[in-house]
Length: 145
Image: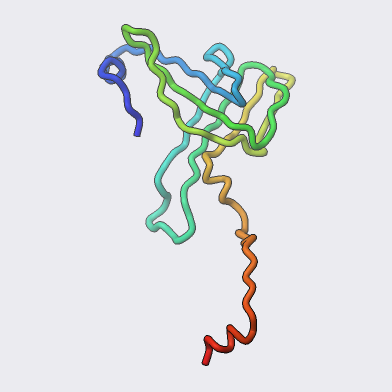
């Protein structure tokens, strides 16, 4: 749950507000001047039913206004949205995300777009147990009888 001060809540309810954004990728902060847009997609589950073994992956798509070299899948992303209060900006984190393979570098327009998913993406794929189960046939046969 996002906790905010009374000043921040009042700022969100105001008819006029000033927002700011900071995106941290591998401990490097990118400010609003570096960011062209942020798209945040979040939810609990989709559809009419919630199937066993399924969950919704929250995602964020960030378009930067310049090229960012060295981005790799698996890097951590911390997007934060801030609102201006009388005491300065108060930021709320959207969560921890992992950069996916979807990294687009548009050298013609000098833009970089990344797509990152929350840590549920680490659970993708087929589960393969690394446990070794050793059982002696006589013990096993004894349990069957």
